[in-house]
Length: 477
Ligand code: BGC
Image (cartoon, rainbow, N blue to C red; front, side, top):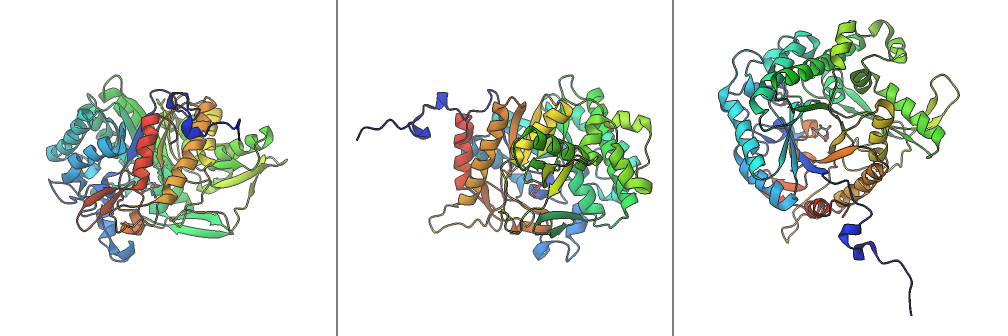
């Protein structure tokens, strides 16, 4: 029987693939120092708050810790080769452990610590992989915690000094710097506890180092000190780094998804996103706390000066957002707020992590909102991915079918955003490898490469093949 059906997408020549990403798109994978490096007390490294926190029994599932983790500190060559050959990545987002560089947080730098990142960066460059360095992914030097951590405004200045030093030392090879990873996670998780709505009224409580429980007023001041630290670091990177250094942050912005795609719903979702992020992205990009935020916090509002706000909003080269889940669904409302939050249903689909509400639309709307609210000209998805119940099959392979489903669905929506003209310049998959997943220890695997933590054997998963093919095509595979 003759058929006039359209050919299957798979038959379409790759060059004409309508699911293509823009030319020059960065396809990266991401990790962070404490989660992969290990070598917790080698080469004069100082203690971090995560060393202290994980060594206290009861804080982490199975009392796991990052003492050895993926042993990336010693195996970085093998890991870079994996990124190049098995994943096809052209970018790598890693973080620098502040206590490796300044064991006491400030003062004398540690040449051996710096040397590790020099070697890593050289290895990446030789492999044709663009290094993207994050300066703070939560492993604060313990000595600074002993002085109050981010509750102490002086830490902001210490962070800037360390950031400027790194930009000076790596700036000839590293062009992209992220100041801070996920303000919300480490501030709320570490200083009070973070509550996440996961549907049906259920709340998941997430904690982390240093494990404090501050009052709301104290917490708002920590938030402020953290954004101030970011601003001062941006200025230090500009003054001490190379002239072509590019700098931004990587924030897990709270994402409002419009229930229906009409202009009224989209407007409502934008308003919601701006208010939900008043304490971090909004003040970082607007240089002001919204009226609603100041009204809501009242006597608990942070203490700040006009000068602080100018520093906090120091001009950036890009906006980095970590995108995993929708935070709220909204519809328009006629009150002053302009939006109404719709409850997430108890049966809403989830991925394996307790907090991980599934909805690919969030990676379409997040960069859209960043462009429409703040006019961003360059956006990176600095993290996206999911954990899964990965096991090694008798044939030696790891079949993470749900992760492939997740990635294809999210990347399809991200491609839709780029096709709309939203200036997304790159995507970093979390994570390059299974690793130490904070309070969940090693029980939650987010990697596209499986790690056998007993033998340190690396096994690329099914999702690694999917990612590699996506990079090769520069289109959703
Ligand atoms: C963090 C990572 C973490 C990942 C998965 C992000 O919140 O930046 O460190 O492992 O999400 O939970």
